[in-house]
Amino acid sequence: MSGGARGEKAPKEKTGGGRRKAVLLAAAAVLLLGGGGAGAWLGGLLPWPAPWPGAAAPAEAKAAPPVFVEVPDIIANLNTAARRQTFIKLRAKLEVEGPAQAAALQASMPRLLDIFTTYLRETRPEELRGSAGTHRLREEMMARANVAAAPVRVTDVLFVELVMQ
Image 1: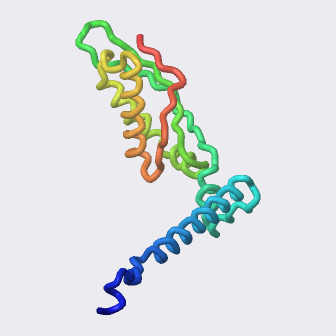
Image 2: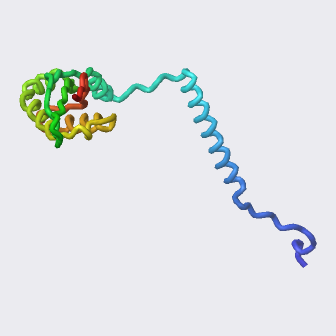
Image 3: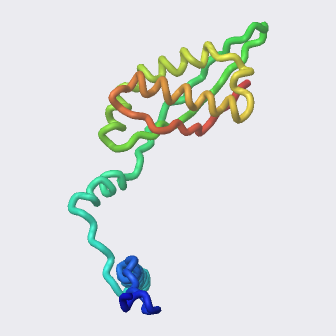
């Protein structure tokens, strides 16, 4: 009989337990270093990363304040089926993105007044009632202004006075 049969145990084969410990140890080290670095950065110990060159240029270009162009008073009669006429008086300002666009918008003001007056004359008084009517009027005027004054882009219509009688 051989010596292995008498009760001697055969040596155990490694199943990769040493490799698993090394991977876990490396992962723990990465997490510890990453967490420490993040804590130091959030704590102000590490400097803030510098932005890429040219990254600040678009932000500075959009920092210019908007320009408001006054629309002359518009008085128009609304579309009614009744004998009694209903009038609207409208004073507004158009918001554009810069002085160059404001000058171009001012040059096309006669066309804008014509389009706004024509639109108002076809509007019924019921369509202008309430905040939903005012919002709809603002959206319609902004869309018409963008078409009439292209390539100028009107970003908003601000009502200074809106009276129906």
